[in-house]
Amino acid sequence: MGKTGRINNKYTVEFKIKVVEDYLSGKSGGLDQLVKKYELKSNAQIRSWIKKYNEDPSSLGIDMRGKKATGRPKVIRLDDMSLEEQNHYLRMENDILKKLNALLRDYEER
Picture 1 (cartoon, helix red, strand yellow):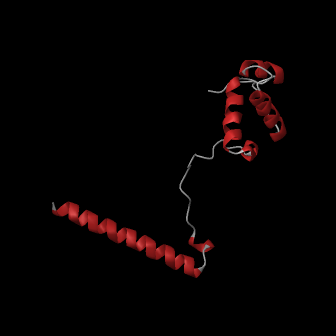
Picture 2: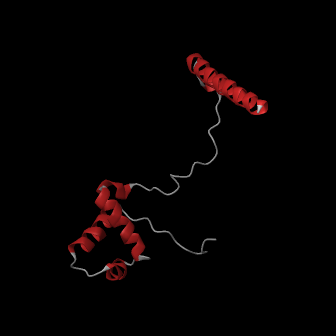
Picture 3: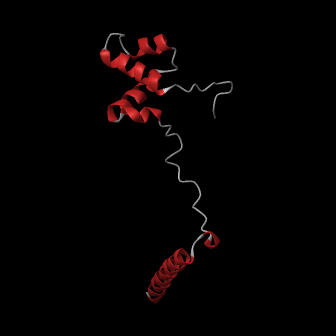
């Protein structure tokens, strides 16, 4: 359950880079000092930015929240496909059903 009345701040890429480079320079002390200096919520935020910065500095501008969730399977609408795509999809579906039918037949024979 989330906290009520909590405000999520959105920081610019430039700000994140400034904080990370400040940390990497070692002049501002540790993470806790940077949290106070830049009025951030926690040092976990800075650690996350440092990790992204080390992998690819341009990734600091990408919001990855929810990107790994798969959600519901995509609904296939044949009406939105070309005839060639429909044909390919229906052949694939038919092959899957044939394999399933063969597996069920083998299972029942045992």
